[in-house]
Image (cartoon, rainbow, N blue to C red; front, side, top):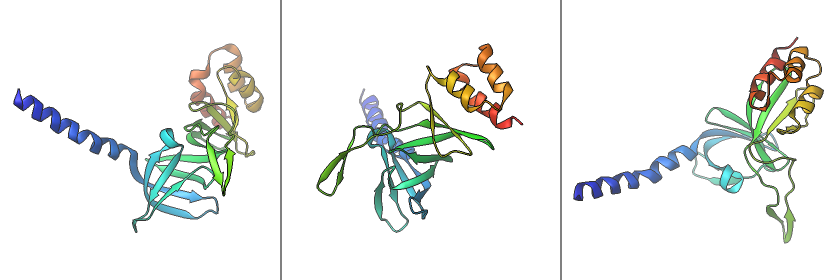
Length: 185
């Protein structure tokens, strides 16, 4: 019984170490002024809607979506748009598909002594957004609107339009549809 207790205590003691290893990783941040900063990034996206960069010199700084244009972490690229972070899922010559990873809507920020409520794009964390290469706007693709939005946004690709209209592709196959769109001539 004593061995089980010691073993359990040992495993529980290692749990915080393994969890911190999952949330801190080497990465790169691109600031709003296009400066590239490298260091260890602590992922606070779900909890606080921001990231923390620990530089090689030991400096620690928190970045919100307003402070950066994007960052890379664990081989994934993220962009900042409308007070939130979005993870790149698919990219190609015609469009990029993102998933929203934060929900900073309604958070309070301080502009000096003045308190400002953050407003973000439509949708919520976990929703998909499509950005055409010839446009800066992220277009929200919800389960309800994705057929209409993709039909409008991907109008120059008959394969994608036919897959949507025939019902062969649904919201769960949105990644496949955007890959098809990027391969369309």
